[in-house]
Amino acid sequence: MNTTTVPYRSGEGPQAALELNFIELYLGTQGHTLQSLETLSEAEATRLMKAACGYAALKLAEIEGRAGLRRRIADIMSVG
Image (tube, rainbow, N blue to C red):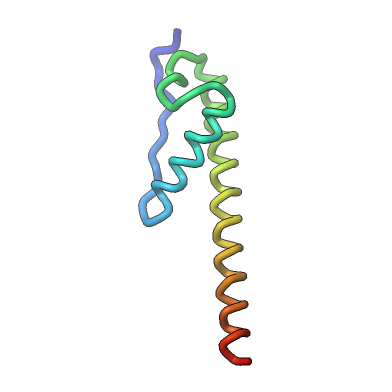
């Protein structure tokens, strides 16, 4: 049993809560929660957190990309 916690500090700003939700979602698909990582070896917990953070970053980028596309479409439609 690992008594060392894997440090995770959610970012600040409007996307912080969404980022944390994506991390928790990913961990859930792997059968874990942020709390359950404490029961894993440090190496395994770190591996899972890196993967979860990568997943969250991709999902946030996807949302940002869609928002940008919607803005461009709205701009085109308002000119026409």
